[in-house]
Length: 147
Image (cartoon, rainbow, N blue to C red):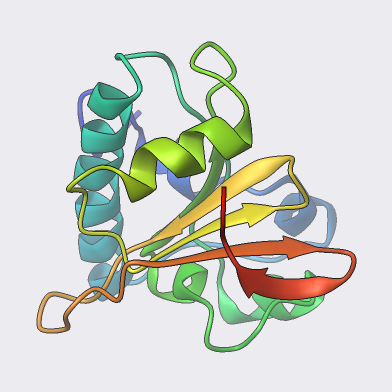
């Protein structure tokens, strides 16, 4: 198992049951792997913020075919290896995690509370400035996060 950081493996950040079921090769290229290492190191900072509680990544890297199959936007940071969907049940609810991230100095690009079930967190490519945008997505659509 190739570790991307002390607590996150490359397998964990690229695994997809959906890709496996549909015969999709979800292997990242070298640039995407570099981004995944960056993502893993940022997730280490998130883990520290969340009192070193285990983070469960449900979705990390997605190749274009997988991303399309899932109905996600073609501008998704998942395609670049710069986003993860996760929970941290031992810390708290997804809403509590989003609140902690907003009040931290973690340089995220977007944090999204998705359907009150998981947190989407994305980061910028190195030369870009993070927007630190916080959103909520639910059955009504997307809106600015407010607690």
